[in-house]
Image 1 (cartoon, rainbow, N blue to C red):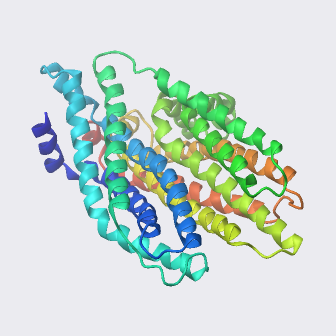
Image 2: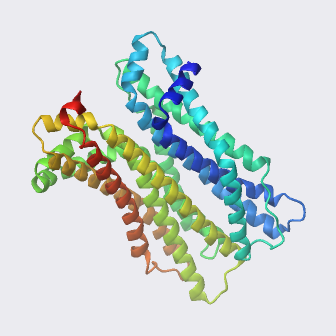
Image 3: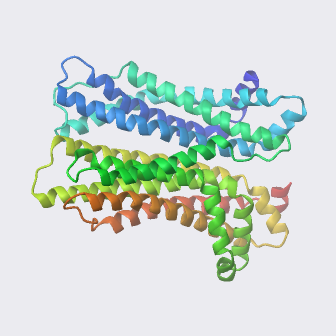
Length: 442
């Protein structure tokens, strides 16, 4: 099966381009930030600089582990679902589920290994730039030299390969169940994980009220609470989408006509497949809103008190900015990859709709309504998670007020997410509609 996996990668490299890109970006970020541990451990580094570098490597390194897994999982899930006929054919010719799992997992590991090897050079460059940024803000001494060693290299390869193998195993497990004629139910592990994320998020928000107003770690509770809430909403995004469709079915049918009808029916039928698109959108909206707005409220409180920002305050502000930047890149890549793969796979479906009497304009309109509904769902629950973290912080932090630019921050985040969703979906659908209907169905 490993030989078959290698042939599959060689014969159809375009199918794995999205997964390779996600794994490559994840490896670059993981290596770059974990190399801060190598730099901090070099001889001659003072304690303050070592603390700043260790904090950057620990916090963002932990984030990168989750983000790499989500990024690779989203693209691999769409990839495996598109290979349903291939997997069914392998099953009918005698391949066992274990053999198919080894084949797909082997493909993912090879892609992860290639991505990690390609990421070494860019990661060293990114690590140098990150160290220069810390030096420019006075958080690290000017004499500290960059070091890229075993911690950065080992973390990059280890996290990338483990995320690729784990995501592939989970995706192909569901696909082999469906190919065997059974329905792929939501696994108990995923349900338990989603519930734990929601409970942890609520616990983080409640813990904010048990802290002192001037405690340095006050931002951690609401920020992590919002992150876990966003993860929990992302896990249960299928059920949330179906609930929203039940509420909007009649209004959409009245407003959008045939396109609205097609969109609601299509989304309801494929609601479980939309989780790969909703997950990055919810995470992007929720984490971005919470992190940036909480940091804006903290900066406003410090300015109002007349105090000068300490090194620790600067560290937190820099880390928040960098973390949000990483989330923006990852979530946009995840979103665009998943939307492109899922929409381009629907060429046959679009052809069938046109043969049944739908015009290309109606099909494109239905796809646009679908993208709008996905955007609405992702933005709605991402916003709930983001402001659920901001409100407790503002209530507890002495002198903090709801940031005046919070609506602007939220609007920019929503605009970026909505543009990525709608433009990618419509552009891919328009390209798919160029295929003649008869040829698309055939």
